[in-house]
Image (tube, rainbow, N blue to C red; front, side, top):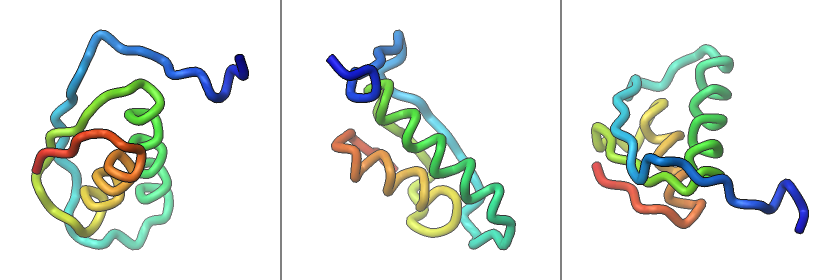
Length: 73
């Protein structure tokens, strides 16, 4: 099996996170938010978050949702 396609498992089933909801101009924060979303998906972790669909919260939640996991906001 390809190591990139392997699903890593975590002892956590859900993580609660609160991030900035305003659109941030620093691309490093946006990149980190996307990386976090991808990491949650790769570890099969659902997201509970502040409910915003914009800014950093929106980026993380969209990544997790697009990855096929539950997003509760």
